[in-house]
Image (tube, rainbow, N blue to C red):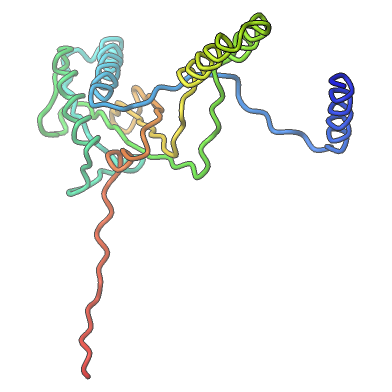
Length: 226
């Protein structure tokens, strides 16, 4: 009976597959992407960016040239007053601190005497977050364990099922609706000396930390006479 059901299932799948004439979408190979969830993660990023900036300045011979850290909101446009948000303010301080710790001459105010380190933050919203399956090999290993234990007592099978659930939960990552792109560059006379972009997942409730707050809506009040 089981063989007959399997045969019927295979026939149905072949029939459905035979009706498909258009190319099927295929996802990218399995990769990993880090998720920012703490201010410490911001500091880790600032350290990595400062290290790359320091190495690039040494490589190009800018040993005594000061730099100024600047937040931009477009390709090259300054954000202007009142545009700071939590990540912007923190990353500016953290990157400045890391540059000073690396021994890079860093300006407190831009006086056009050195290089400009620009960084830009872009929040990306996905209306339908992608499904995240367990990492490759997890399902295979679980299936192999179940096959080996198919004749085990019910109590052991129950424990194995609970363990399998825990493994699936720990190897799966819940993707939210938001990602953030942080691009950093060194500019000298309108020429890029270095540019890097980092992409991270962020928790949905934290998205506001990475972009400018929207102004409060204005409500026009009208008087009415009775």
